[in-house]
Picture: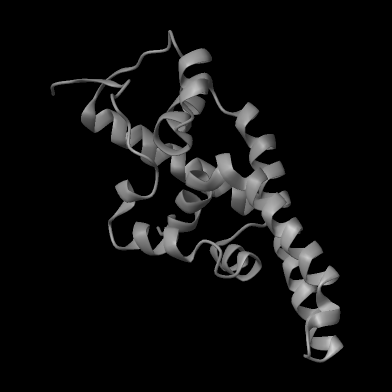
Length: 169
């Protein structure tokens, strides 16, 4: 199954709040500076409405993820934090004593199962790939392209050291 949009959302989760603020600022700027624009008022208003819709979609996604994360186990939250969110402070503080002793194969199976679980939660709340693409427009295009081309490691920042201990099979 194609979970690229779920991966893009998970990689972007730590920045969703800042993305909302940026879109909100863009809406304000477009509205305040509309008097300088020579396009038709309806056209300007439609562009502003589209930006507002994007901000609402980002807010909805952020709130949904904030609702889903407490439902997951500590292990699943660690796996999301480790692979997708990569917030050093959270890993250092909340998961400092948390260690997983998996084989590499088992780790990737767990990640795949967790991705499927997240996709299911999103689906149950009405977020399909089509809705995600429709409501976020081209905001996630570069992330989706990188994931689709197999360049997923280029999406998040690089770690200086890993925290998952993989055993040999």
